[in-house]
Length: 59
Length: 424
Image (cartoon, rainbow over all chains, first blue to last red; front, side, top):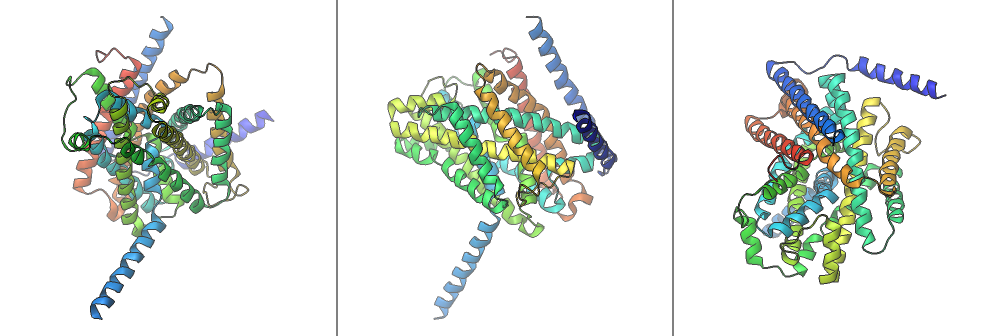
């Protein structure tokens, strides 16, 4: 029962991934730059969160 | 006779315009007034208590900021007929889509908990046990959605928006010094003591409450669910402008209340302010408590819908309030699941509610920049927006605002994680 639900959910996610596999936005240099900057920003934030987590653990 | 007929014609014309506006009014006012949620009211009461009327001008400046961001969602929703989550999946692919959706779900759920904290704290002033508040609120929120009509939900939500204006008569009831209030509203100034770290933190908190990630997702989905067309966009923008005006007036009302009655006091939350008001002026205390409950309630109904709409759009479920429960079972199941889960956390004894509130600020910082950057990129895509793409001026205004919001919300998130980093 649980396994079936899990398989069904995984199937739905696969379908969604396939449906949206290609971005429809025209990837101009400005768009590419913005998305790259966003990735960098998010990595920076994740880094800070991980650092805070480690510092809190060692307190 | 000719003058009379002209006057009558003008009267009929104005009446027609008002009727048309009333038909289209809704998403803009609701999202803007709900922006003054439990967290927002807490921030405004703390601002007033700490700095009196000196920062009202700053709150007024935040009105146009909120308008410019939310106006973009009106255009995007009306032109593409897609909610923000679906628009991100469609335009930027699955990676950014999943990131935004899962982040939104987490932020919304955590924010919902803070709304329930506000609601239970507000009604506890009247002796209502938290469990009763949570159950009654969930039932009321459920009743608003299950009747299967967007129109009914919207009009009920507008009634709660009207209750949120309770801070305005409350502010007049305490007879504040009008000259000082006007001076604080119209003349940009720093409070006595100058620019300190505490002031900077409070300014960041005020900006942080002005634009939240759920607002972008909510209004765009609401515009789609309401079936707003491109020709209605002018009214959608006007509606957003009216909402921005109301949100600023309510925020100023809160500041005037605490600035007049609790000057110089350290207020940690709005419920504490309401309890202290009870000792000074019973009616004003009651108004503030009712307003706080209403703020939490409005926030909760909008946030839970923002998540449900987003999930429905991406998973392809029927996801309109115009559907009956039988027609959109997953949409409503998710809506009730989020409500019940958030309400239950508040009732857990010794739940880390302070930590959750802190977490909201930090997680929101990861989603807000992404949502706003996607918004700007989509609004500049000619294929998507056609004639309604951003103009040069709109880009200048929106990019400046978004850059400022990203900078400030990042600093706010970091200072929430590391309180001493700004020297506080």
